[in-house]
Image 1 (cartoon, rainbow, N blue to C red):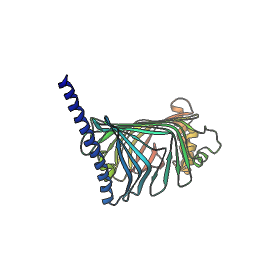
Image 2: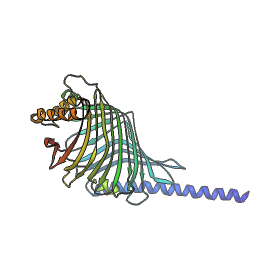
Image 3: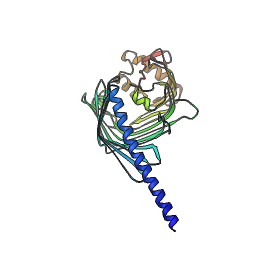
Length: 333
């Protein structure tokens, strides 16, 4: 019995020593990371770093966090950031955000408020901490811009995972429900107010390749850029409008996409009106495009449903031979 008690005491003391060492090392590592960012010219401030959770967890709270990258002009600030991890799996982290935080860009500042925002991040146990997979759930989100607009979301679910067969590729999934766009956007897209106030559902399922891994360097140095997208599903449901898209594109060094996207749209005339109103389709080509779409719809079933292929090349989007607008630039700041 005495040996058993002695063994238990030794194990307990060893675990206590490990937790004390790990918590101290985590504190030092986070403090050093902040100091390194300052040395690189960042505005990096954290009022306090507290590590708790003994005996089985490293629950870290960073208070009054302010980070700004001078190279991109992107900054983020929050009253706190919590990083929760098991003591024996410190590379698997649950992140908890406060009910309000801010993201600033050279163009505008976004203020995020929500009932709950929690994400889990699983990294490979390597010094560079490459991202393995992640999930984020946000409830009752509101985004307010310094330019005067705001948008809301009932719930957002996001997930990523590495693609084992490819280097620097991740599969992305997202589902947004109850999205209310800014009032000005709604008025522009639907001036008669015929559509519901909120977009019922938005979905995304895509595999995206990058030119570099998502790891520590992605935050500390430069964000990886997209080189290709294999789009399995991009869909939306908004009142009578149903939209689905799938296809594959490549992206060059300047962020210009090339490739083909197949689309299916129900109530396509209203969707065309929205595209013209938002500037995605040039107004002068809208009549020609509408006639072409009427012809395509007549070939493939109901007149209010269209199946077509969009081609992206030379910085333009084409429906067959008809240019319908500029291709969007795909660049991560």
